[in-house]
Amino acid sequence: MKLKWLTTRNRVKQALSGGVLGITLSLGSSSALADTVEVLHWWTSGGEKEAADQLKAKVEADGHTWKDAIITGGGGDNAMKVLRQRAVSGNAPSVVQMKGPAIQEWGTYLVDVDAAAKKLSFDKILPTEVKSVMKHKGKYVAVPVNVHRTDWVWANKKLVEPILAKAKNQKGFDQILFVGKELKKKGVQAFAHGGQPWQDATAFEAISLSVGGPEFYQKAFVDLDLKTLKGPKMKDVFEKTREYTKLLDPNRKGLDWDKATKLVIEGKAGMQLMGDWAKGEFLVAGQKPGKDFLCFPVPTAGQRGFLFNIDSFTFFKQKSGSGKATQGQLSFAKQILTPDFQQSFNLKKGSIPVRVDSKVGAFDKCAKDSFSDFTNDKVRRLPSFAHKMAMQPDVESAVVEVITGFFNSNMTPDSAVKRLSSSVEEIIED
Ligand code: GAL
Image (spheres, rainbow, N blue to C red):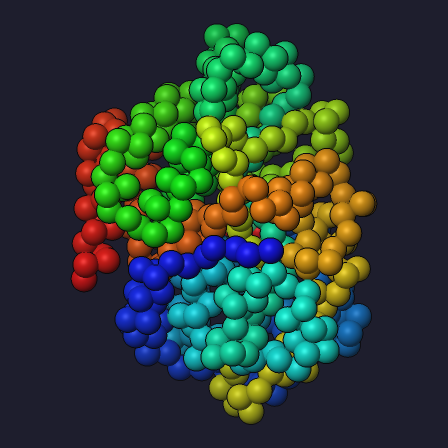
């Protein structure tokens, strides 16, 4: 399985970026507590917590102490801010949840966990392009734990199924909008949508894939092709997004993603555009896919796509350490990819296992569909930019700022296209 990931433009930018966001960092402190692993992460919702607890139990069963450094805030923006502050003051946690291109940016501050990688043959069990992102200078400095998909629709079955049947004649994202508008006519909130920039970006990337198709998504958000960013399809995407925002609760500011999911679970809203960590919330509430809720990827015109978001963990050098991974860090790295952990963790998290040799017999239909799409070469796999997989952090922030500005104002699609393309242009031409 081959994943087309960072493009030349993004790679060049990465090489030029001169260290982590241009700041000089000192290393983490204290290796006296070599077998205490302090883990910085943002898994706080019901489903996320159950999944994180699986990992904690594994590390502790291996004789180490798990110290939580939980930073609330879905999507990890707050966690990344805290990481920078802690790294600057010489107090980096030993284990940090981190994504895609950022791993390379932090590369020189990380220890390698090659000893664990050799033991578990990471090179054999990980998809080709996933493993290259986990390595810095040829050594594993990060370990992936799952594959999430972000282009999902989560629906309350009772509310949505009867309308979906009537939406068959509609194409692409119009199908979803049709269902939303029908719900609104009935006085039901069409979409549950939380009020934070990363949630706006998550819905927007799904709409982009749905409206523009995979090739458009690749060019616009992975290649950062200015012609595509300025082009007519980009305007179509913003137009459909405007139809979508008109169906949202205007009082959503600050609403967390899991509170939004709860509205769908409780039948107070029909649908949510969200990654499959949302499934963890339905499961914690005792609901079953196909019976109480529906999951389906946004319909795309033409070739189907799959927006992936891979959670991984990195291992930070400790100030008074030897520059090598501690036993606790190695244990952590090793646990993540064992077949039984891949099962138990991903069953709770809503994601699918990242090992290529995984069996998904015990998983539900949403996960089985996801696994079969992820491993099907006819489905185009693309990195989620809303979840930090596609762009360098500075480009991503600029893109998300325009998107969230559009969601939360009366900005026209024309003006959004101009703002988006010019802010990307400014950064890449720097
Ligand atoms: C994503 C992360 C997921 C999930 C989500 C909401 O960035 O990859 O694991 O936790 O944020 O918090």
